[in-house]
Amino acid sequence: MLLLLAAHVGPTVPLAPLAANASVRLEAGVVLPQLGGRIAPMLFGGYAGPVLEGESTDGRLGDGYAFTVVQKELTLGLGATVRLFPAEAKWNPELTIGPTVQFLETVASGSSAGGAIGTTTEHYAQAGFLVAAGAGVRLGPGALTVQVGYAGAGLDGLLTGESTTGAFNPTVGYRVGL
View 1 (cartoon, one colour):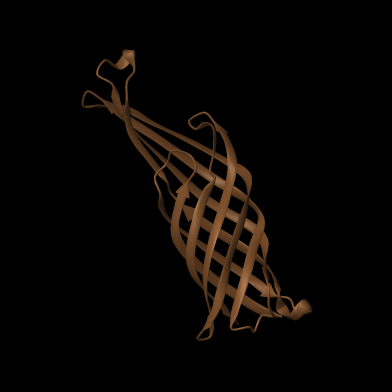
View 2 (cartoon, rainbow, N blue to C red; view 1 turned 60 degrees about the vertical axis):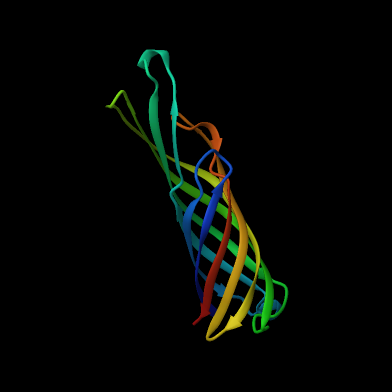
């Protein structure tokens, strides 16, 4: 068996009304010798921190208020990457899929008429999933990868209400075998 290590970076584009932001995903797995090394079970972890900023009105606050919501998302998962061709192919389409647990911290703060309204923080964990399709091209000792993925979990928090962490995530990465 061959040990694999990979890093992916790219923008995260949330489905909820949060701003696009940068994200990173790290993977560690093994290439199984069966089926020409086409299947690689792995553990993965990622981080994103989308933000929502805006203004609104509320009769209780007179002139309205400004707010900021930061959603810090740490994702851990167990999945597999399946490749179309044997592991040693120069170019290889691939699909990565697996369940995740997203550990979330939502921080909401605001101000009205120049004064702080206060900050509220909420923590929770949610089950979700990751699916990413792409391709790898052999380059040096490893492979340059390009993927377009979707990851998400449902939310029903006090601050977020009924929402989602769902986001599209195009990434560029590099995978090495040890």
